[in-house]
Length: 447
Image 1: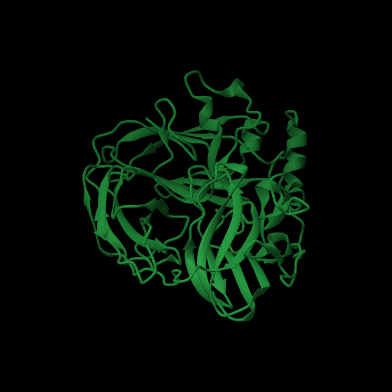
Image 2: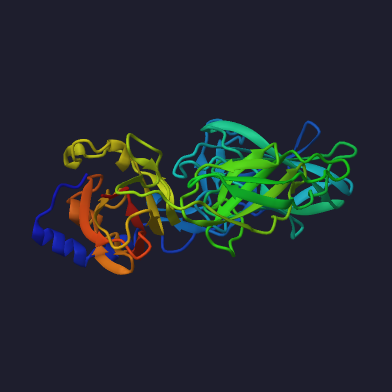
């Protein structure tokens, strides 16, 4: 770990920051190792294909791990002879395509994908849906891949699709960055007679009622099961944007077996838009039209403590009130010397990163409070590697803020205290805008 540099060295490093940051990922994305043309291997009842032989595309640079994704990684429990799998995570548009999936006869076939992942850097994300295309045609954009609990604990997710006789193209595509991170094999078998190949109808009559300032109870009409199918579950999506598109980014519940859901994680005095998807053996239905409902007014408040990107700890609330960004883990080797007495160290073990904002409501209009922002640099080891701006209610309060420079080292907590006035509605909107690499925040306190 880098020691605290002198002021002269800090200035020199800042001047060279652009050069240092440019090496976070190779200048150009890699090429796929596989072509997608490798013939499958005969297994009981069907044919198996390794994801390492698929044609990989849609690469994204993930700076935190200094690499391009999708990526090839080692996995001890992979059934691949080389124990290699494809990590699809962190690539918003990542794809894995098999172009030589041969079916002896046209008809329904079961696609079984072996995969594994823990929550990792996507804290709280327990399902990472993927999309499936067959011969270039979209089959589903809502194939569920529930968390397996460990990066070496594998299970399979299955879907039934129609294949033509001869060669077929099957593509797994990401819906956002929170994607499966250990894709091992695709096994294709003829489906049993009468297998489900029809997506369920869109759930109807979605409605909701605010039960309190932080809970909305939703209900909808159960979707009728198509012939030879069984509607097995429902997924619920939520946003504050009326034009939102349901995706893993805004999924709040999956695998529901009843046509109702109590959203107990809503924020007070806020309008929400909900959508529901029905799921059967063939995949997910089209999402229901957004339903609009608002929570009750906020109770009078004088303090807020939010653990950005993490769970509730002590008097600190779990991450809430945010828009945009993603949660990451930051818990390695935290230097505790700068943590004030009474502040849980767990606040610095996770963070929200990217371009994001927080909205805190329930304060008296035009009341004055101290906003304390807690930071920790989890990745970079140089001045000037991460720069971002912070504004409160539209006024810039931190410009080109550099966590490493402010703290004097990485993995070292630092706090910035700002006196600010609530707006006419009694709220604080705190926005974090990247200048160079992503903004980051460990915790937020208003009192």
